[in-house]
Length: 119
Image (tube, rainbow, N blue to C red):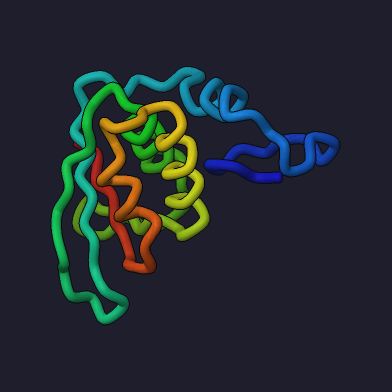
């Protein structure tokens, strides 16, 4: 089972606790002081909006980790976010960040394409 890009043993099935995922994401990560910017766009490439992600939230940390570790090619400083990754980040963030990322998570649950930039 892969969650947020990390492999978890098959014997854990679909019951991998969020705490274990958070631990893997945060391991060796330095996200402090980094700005995370998302762009939402249609599949045709029309830019819908630009979103700043609140520092200190799980969503912020997970997106920094994703940006640093994904094999997606960088284009103008942005990297595409895979659908499964954005849904997984959203689900965990809803649980641990609560209201602070509610609007962001609602957007990540849609079918639009997202790109992330970390500076």
